[in-house]
Length: 310
Image 1: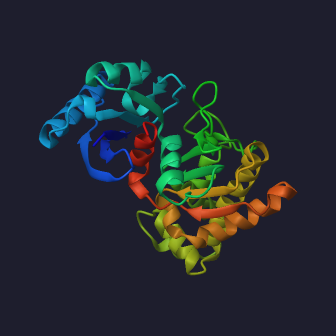
Image 2 (image 1 turned 180 degrees about the vertical axis):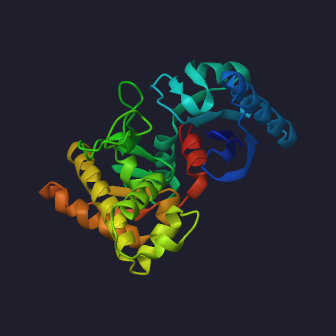
């Protein structure tokens, strides 16, 4: 039997999966992400973990087709990472370094693109070839699959939809240094930011005013219960997302929007208003693009990374 490894590097933990070459996940585990000293230990730690697993399972190097790896930053087609702030990396030739450490082939990709590839292969995007996956969490990630392949772009920054400008009049600064980015309205932090802004600026009654330690989940739960202010926040989030997705589809003409990340747990409650605004702003031939929820959860990254090698 031949094997591949799928690796998903996060700022706190590194998820690793051992797969056979038919795509069956045989085992998965995690190791801590050591970001000290500009992340110099990350790739050696990965290589050491792979080596230990191979020894434990009796897997020879000749039986491993390679290791795919997703990282939280721009990655070019030749495996060059151009600054991963969360990992402490500047420019880094990830694939060449990992190959030197392991002795077998490697391919790398941006973590959001790699997760999208995993979902199209084994998750909610199965059966589709042109897909935009949107991960709504602390920030907003995007992964674009065109004709079944990841779209990378010239600098490895394709599908960075979280930093599309949806409101040029915004005065508050986004974490990227820009203003009016989609993340400022539609991410978990963006939803919470808007809720606090509405609470400060409006006088209407809201159950949110009685809550201490307000969270994004509180805002969405209040909206589900009909709280007027919370519903305004959700509507603003959906409108911003609808504008952004309509713009994306005007360029990429995708057949499916795949929604993942922690905020997506709200399910159809969020998908319905996003779909409504998308159809309002989309080009007429693209209004019927489908919306689905991602299915692989935290395993999407390791599946997609393995798919890079299969």
